[in-house]
Length: 195
Image 1: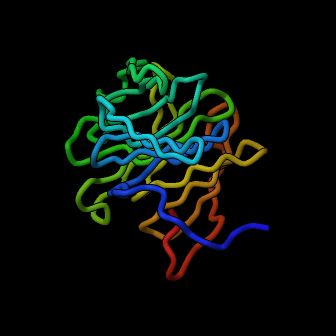
Image 2: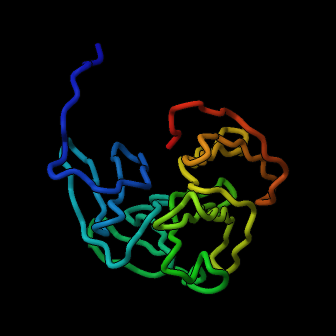
């Protein structure tokens, strides 16, 4: 029987938690504001300081947690606590990647091995849309614009559900070999905010 009791497992709590990833009986998330990684393992929460302000967790590869920030994609080893930059392509180009006004805000690793992630305006997201990107380690492709891209969920057929928290919409994106084929509304909310 599943218990209905809710317990606080972390004190103090994260101020801006993002990038939830569940792998190998562990739960990972990032506190964007404090640049910290949290790992829930063996009924304990472990906290690590990151050398970058990571905003997305893409995957766990062995003991390496693949994370992204506005400046780079890197690997943080959860055993040795060492960080290695994998790619710095995010730092060049348009205002979304090279501005104090925008930051990455969630993403995922696609089945094809591509990175998909979004950016959002830091202080006034209702005034300017963020971007939605697909990337390899050396190429970045703009595929759409959303205000606050969140909750990147890949379906078994390869499609993605991606919410825009500000517009209160969950979009369904269909891709083929990393190319956007279609976008349609999956669910629109009147009062709840999908995140």
